[in-house]
Image (cartoon, rainbow, N blue to C red; front, top):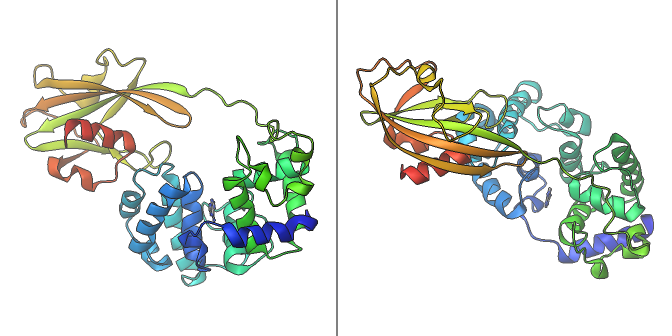
Length: 347
Ligand code: ADE
């Protein structure tokens, strides 16, 4: 790649999108942006980035925060473990590095939630260290450029790509090189209809030369999302409602929702509902119900909302649930499906 790197860097310097995290070499800001951008489009990521650094402008403010404040800012972004890991990592930096961001690749990688990609991005953008940042965009560019046809999610693919990129990056400015590869993947070397005619590294690209951009990278077909059936219960008790916090592991970890049970379908009220909610027969009224379909990357959720009115002298067994004022519901960190349900209920 060495021969075309000057073209790549010149192209980047001339045409790159101006994004707030590209105007800084502060490792904290770069970290925040990279974690947000891991699973998020740039336009949406930009809004969350601005909100996040406004609320938590440095390691100390993040370490001091309550995790629910962080989840509230993160609300709607998905993959909530990212937010909890950032909180943990901020506390690690306070405990182990006096609140400073560590300044070498391996110490950065020791922080919670930081893998090879994020460590390389921070080490190169903030500290100009020569580590290739290998995300999905960069994998695609590299697979096409070098003609790597191993399946994209295999360790063998990663090793080969990493080896080539280490050789390339050590000859150049690592921060600009990594940004340029990311930008090229996002703007030119796109998954479909890549714009090879304007590509700055076209002259040495394997896929362009042999007309293989459709076949590379070798991306085996994705598994179908699994179907899940969930029942949510809006239990109204004299101006209050029952809210439940999900366990920190797994989907929507740490976020709040109405009490929820899974079933084999959404048509019927689940048999174990009364027992689960601790309600006695005749002590409540079903006011309404609605159905929702919600798409996640690996799951399609069919949900049903049951609106129940319960009188206050019922022995509702509250388990670990909270009884909160109906008007306060939106102040809690909630997942997207919950927000959809609340919108429908006009809450
Ligand atoms: N996606 C991941 N990192 C990025 C960056 N630094 N700029 C633009 N998009 C990105």
